[in-house]
Image (tube, rainbow, N blue to C red; front, side, top):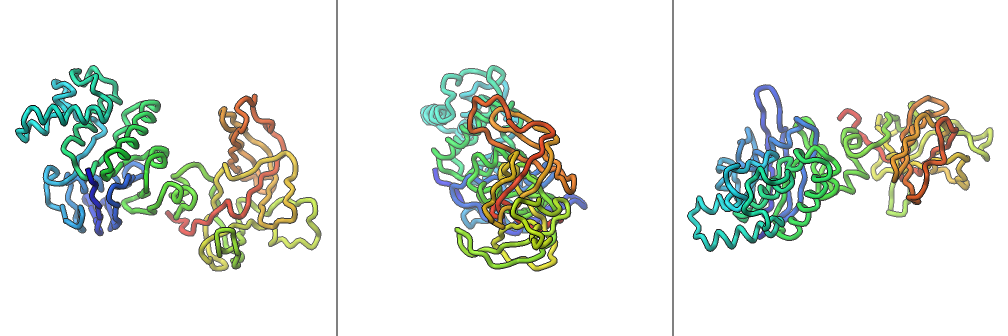
Length: 396
């Protein structure tokens, strides 16, 4: 099977005074595993329903391989939908549930049997074909729904939060199955979820949505490492985020090419810790934090500064920065250590401002009894200017 390119062409949708979708415009590539990710009410399911044909947009078009499908009913589009609720017929066997659409088309029995067995094999359910849905686990029922959606050989498979009704272990298992299926059959998958871990695990690209708008589209790496807005930074993973003002922006040659070194005044963090080797001549402005950025920012510009907890180093001793000015160092006290087995989470209260900074330390030795850093220890936290990033839009 080959997938279709899907173009969302300036689609808008309102329900009364509520703006569900606001001029959505992007293209999903042929054969891509594309995820619509956002909180409840952000518009992702409305957009999926418009792609499927269950809703019509107020404005704009939906194109499958350059053909506008707006106005076509769902059964006339080259797409099928897998619902959160499975939508299986309880009185039918697994075999007959999967075969249902072929029966409606009056396909001969030999062809029906051949195709049903093919797709049940694809989702690894051949041994359960004569069972009823109530004899299956939640994960198995969802795999029946996927096989039923695939048997019509659509070019686009739409998945509306298909894992949300399952427990955590089943979700993880079925997520791997979905990724395997996509790799094997090669059609376009459009996946809707509010779970960031699901999106990051399987997607080729992700569209982050909030309040009817698409805030950013990118690979999982791009979304996580370079969030475009404050909302994206906070929604994807855990982060430390602080409002800041640009003090200075100068050209800087990084390993990856030309960038900018930006000095930020960040009231919540205050000035950096005094270190051995600092002199009386050290200017106060030299103790503001430094961060690299790909774009020039103007002096006085209001931005947000973000640093992921796992990018921060924590030590009991003052770090040896070897004269490097691009290392940001703060001193604080451990307010709360949390040991989780594979990592420890520390909540550090900064000495000068009292702000809490989250620090995650990955354990390299899984036989460790726990963190050597304890509650109420005085510690230093540090990170390179290249490990943080600037979010210019602090409103969304």
